[in-house]
Length: 145
Length: 145
DNA sequence: AGAATTTTAATTGTATTCAATTTAATTTAC
DNA sequence: GTAAATTAAATTGAATACAATTAAAATTCT
Image (cartoon, each protein chain N blue to C red):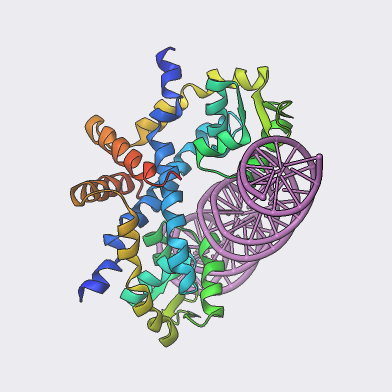
């Protein structure tokens, strides 16, 4: 098999492993997020809002690497459940500000145990997890803008 | 901020970086795959078939970490484009065998340059890429079965 | 000021992804 | 040998993702 075809083998494709690993990890979230009535996308939106309280759709998108095409329906879902409110900014009517509600704030405690449970599912030791964290940061950073 | 909340911060979540990095990398495939008329999912199915020529849906699913709910429509799409054929196994009628066609085989040459182009987009050096490859293998492996 | 450009969300359409169910075929147990 | 259990795909339904377009508001340029 020549070099060209060697690159086309699945075992050699880090991108494929990234894609597959990401989906497997997402799947492992489901039981814990189901228990608190959230999808993964809703969960990461709330992670931002638990810290920042209020945030524009644009800023959410930058932090989560998602666009309004994905976020708008997710935010509507969170609003329908009463976990966030949405309103136009007074100073710039183009901007929609998303704010955590008291009910959304209350979810924070229930979610606090999730990261630990996921970490327990993952087979990497501390040093490996830290290195993966660093490598993914470097990879992600290169895609910014 | 206490330890519980520290775990809930986005910057500390390797899972989020994995999820975001995987999507960014997938996006970088698009121009190259668009040029040969494939989606990423179709592309990875063909990667298997370029090597194995014929494969059951079940085996494809095990290799790609996908189930028939995802694969069936993708395989129908590839069949509609003439890149694969599908038939029931004679020895076990439950099994659907997917086979590469000559047109599908012909795509292999066009796809041969894709991995190199993606690698060029990625900001990791050789050693880092190898380490990421290894860590993702370990992570993925722990989800098998 | 007023036109052209840019920015921000929402909308639309396509393709995934996955859980849950269904159907048909095969294997296992009794 | 047949009923029960298992297996492999397909189907259905919900939730993402993302490109492309649209609409409204703000900014820039002259």
